[in-house]
Image (cartoon, rainbow, N blue to C red; front, side):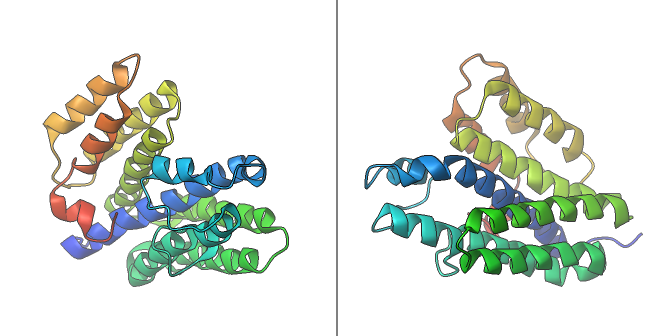
Length: 230
């Protein structure tokens, strides 16, 4: 079995993070879309604060359009999907052409959504293709290290987003349990102290979300969380 380079390990990890970021933010956006239509002019600011992104939008309509589809906005869903694709392309050898194809199909669906009168339908197709990408990765990638790095990035991003969006206590505990199972299979250096603290925080009845975010983002060496990320 070929040994992964540090660069490719980073890219697999961030492929997992970006694919999860697209998946979860689309689901959260779709869940809030109808209520957003009825929002007061600047209530979308709360969503930006929860996601820890700057509110650069001039109106709720501008937010809905640019947050989903503006490739030049680094915090948009479209921009994060492109980052997932950019990582996937250079990893074609590691993940295989069939697995890569589902990220390409997600890009195609995103472009269709951008010009659609019913964008949520096409955004759901983006979500479906991300799920198919994860399924194909599980089914067709022989290397456990490659699969584990993608899944690790996915779990780290999901914990981060769930904390930011104030998801339920049980959901956070579930994702941390999955992270504990996965992290040792990757060969990455991580802080066992921070992981233990994360597990402790997750057991608290009123989980301190800010502390969860801080610990999950500093779980690995600094380079891992800054090479391609937030």
